[in-house]
Image (cartoon, rainbow over all chains, first blue to last red; front, side, top):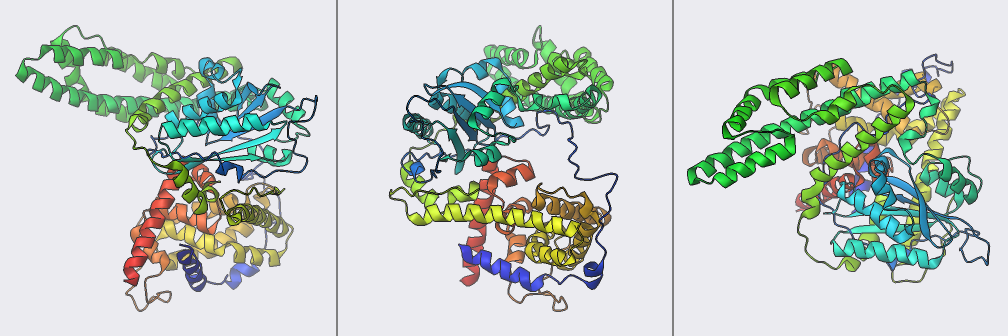
Length: 420
Length: 200
């Protein structure tokens, strides 16, 4: 397999030109520019990725329990958690693409979890989901987090994938064994092929992987986590003036997220209308009025419509078919919260569709706490959409297979190195 | 900081342990090397610039080619990209992501070139005798062009020539790690199948 890589590199060496003299002799610009491209000045970002990730291909997940021991580098002085009576906090970072860090108490229960990137915000923004990981054995807490990430489509369940766990502090073997066993059972029961790379690392490496700095000890880390906001997007907002945050909100939430989300919803509506018309046509032929009633109730549930009867529904379908495409085109050119609000009003009046959630987002935040609340709303909307988009993948039937055997092959083919 | 591995005697071979650690170190060293070179260029060291070119030319060329689809245009673009590196070196911040900085310059230039040419797609005619860079048998680069999608080419280029992990590529391209893995796997399968066909 490596031959083609070597061949490619050799070929590149024959075609790539030398640097021209004009480039070699060109002066190096050593003067400071007044408009740096890659400035250390932070750019305010809304916590959520504005680009909506489409549902992933199905993921096959294999977990090795035994083999994960092979890939645990043990660091001198890393701490083994068996030091007499002295309690050393234990911390673990779970990286899938959502990345979150869990802190454990002396019993190996997760007592706090903090999002370390914006994808983890989607999971942790909801209080119920957050609480489902707290005051539980770390193995269960991690499993819950992994399950959310899988349902959101962050793992490729139909092909191979891998997650990475990085541990630091006073870890006990039992806790680690439990994590490996529980994750293995989770993946095995679902026939997912996912490898787990589970490593205990030195503090500096842990901080690099987790994305924190200025941490001198594990206690420093847990102290920081105890006071840090749970959401990644909530952590650096204090660095920016409120005007900057407001503008970021308008650009990333109103003009990008909400506009795209609404237009996707309306595009789905067009498809649903077309499918419904087909179903109703067939139902009419058979005289199946129960079916027609079912179609009506499904629309009311999904789009917040309230059809009084069959004619009402047909009139709605005709309205959508004739006018929705043009409306979607206008939505995609929205340039301000005001224009977005006007379009939402028009949708409400003309189509009687429930756009309440978008109306809330259309208003720019008026304070920092308002900004943070809206951040949570966006995270939760994204969560619901991703779960819905990925439902087919998760619910698909999968054949049982020997994943221990698969995992051995995956590892020996360098699968873990490819991903991590 | 590298992790020491106390190898655990299980059925997996020692090779995988060493391979994992070795490859990990290689990647870390490479990224730091590039950062160091860029810092030296910032202080006016032209010889570091030439070393930078040697270290990165394969990756930059292949990356540009995925956009420009034409060897001559890619050659020209290479010269411009490295000139821009010199011209913008004051904007690079030490300790940040050197590979990403270089690739961003390359990508911006490629996209500008495409805009200028109204996205006219050139395809190298490997039968053209006049083409100086023509390789008699179809090379890997042209094979990739023929059998892989643009996304797959980028994933392969970033992984093989820039040593990015799938997770990092996912962050660069804005897609889940799993998607990158499956694209890479598909790309390699397509290449292997095509190469088998060529060998007969």
